[in-house]
Length: 108
Image (cartoon, rainbow, N blue to C red):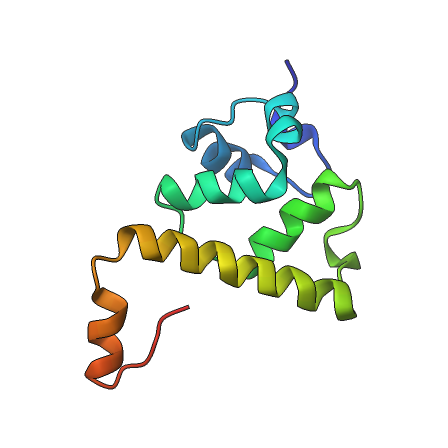
């Protein structure tokens, strides 16, 4: 069993969040993949953060975190927005609609 923090770009803070989300090892993280891992992070209470999402993708590919650019980054942004929307759809109890109605706009 290998610590998550041994994966390039993933330090102790991300390791602790992933552990809290039920992903205890680097092997478990690789097995579930970036999207499922991020889905679990959201379910465990982590705040959505696009950079964390694409860093996770880059880490699992063994690439530098800042290697994500252009069309690839735009595609990951769409995937991230879909994951966040899915999560909020399951857990927001209508708050997004209420906030939009009172003029605060949709949260990201």
